Length: 104
Figure 1 (cartoon, rainbow, N blue to C red):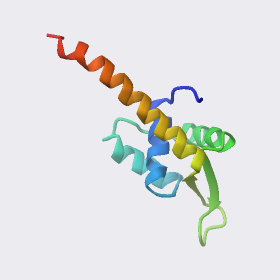
Figure 2 (spheres, rainbow, N blue to C red):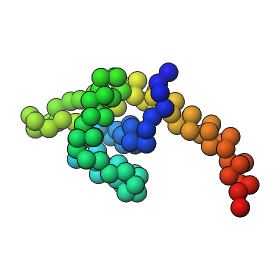
Figure 3 (cartoon, rainbow, N blue to C red):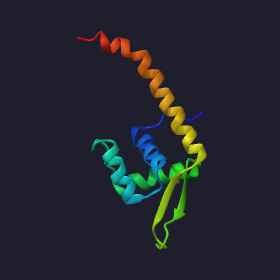
């Protein structure tokens, strides 16, 4: 089992589940998917990407035609982590929705 994901980690995996992306493309995809609520500075993004790569959740590959540009793609393990996290959040939402509906 993995620890609960941060919002940033969740959005990175969700963006990479759509398609492989390089760093700048990933930043833009996350900004779009989060409706601008998540903005990465490069240092933070690459720290998360290194951790996810070390954990086996994503893979790095050289971008076609660019020797210095890296493209990131989600691994099978990463898809499982994303699926588990989405199920956990759905479970929480189902349990907490009644309380939210009683709020004034």
